[in-house]
Image (cartoon, rainbow, N blue to C red; front, side, top):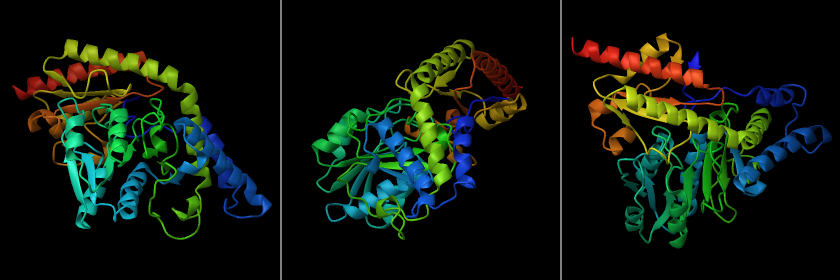
Amino acid sequence: MIYLDHAATTPMAEQVAASMQPYYAKEYANASTIYEFGEKSREAVRQARAIIAYSLHAQPDEIYFTASGSESDNWALKGTAEAYRDKGRHIITTQIEHHAVLNTCKYLEQLGYEVTYLPVDEQGFVQLQKLEEAIRPDTILISVMFANNEIGTMEPIAQIGRIAHKHNILFHTDAVQAYAQIPINVNFYHIDLLSASGHKFYGPKGTGFLYIRNGVKTASFIHGGGQEQGKRAGTENVPGIVGIGEAARIAMQTMTERLYRETRLRDYMIREIQRRIPHAWLNGDRYARLPNNINFSFEGIEGETLLLLLDAKDICASAASACSTGSSEPSHVLTAIGRDPELAYGTLRMTLGEATTMEDVMTAVDAVEENVTLLREIAHM
């Protein structure tokens, strides 16, 4: 099998699984207990928090563990909206955000908040002038994803963060696709809140975290006990926290090599598809994109049929975000960058991983060329 859907999920690393194993049975103590048996669990949670903080150039008490990137996005938006509602009820985001942000914004609109959904250009970039023009005296939060999960475009995060802070507005970024793929310094990028998910970087599913800069107010997301500084109640998922911490540690050690290698494979795939397949449109910016993301729309074919043909050759890819699979509507991201519906339906996303080889990539390009050609011939019969 050639797995080219790492944006959907990644296989858990063996080292990560091994690090988690003791905390399922042998070291099962509740991390919130005060007796000695619980110390190993408490220390494991502390270490994971410190590792993730270090990876972001943050402080350990700024890292809050969650159960997913979607939960982190929900908490960032809902918690900020509630905490700053006396200051204002206006939020700015973009039309190409993950549904965890977009649907949370729609929920907040039902509660009386106003949301501006910024358009993007044909490469998927937020226009900074339009961002500044959208700011109002009652704007309390700007939420722009670090990199798009479908087309891979990386936004001008540092400039957006500077604009937000110039106007005394909080800045949240959904970094679920970017964290552990590229270096992120929350201070350099002027980030106040950042969301991430463990299963996107070879950690366990059901884990995530939210970075909240010290001094930023957020309402408690889950009420109950005093876990996560009283903001997210519930017994700590010690095995999961250990796993996401170990995955982050490994990712930081291997990032430079992975970034170089995946970028090289990505660029090869893009060049070969553009050279060998006519009427293939690259989605997202050619260079300011995630190192593992390849996304094309092909004229005259149906993307899901192409996926089935690739699957028959044991090649796993996707048509859009895994969270959008099954939707009858064209991708909201492709619509936002101006792709017409017919072309949008002919889209293929391939995302590379640390185990992807040049042989895998060459085989995949051959299969895409063969099956796009076949589908076009069938369409003209």
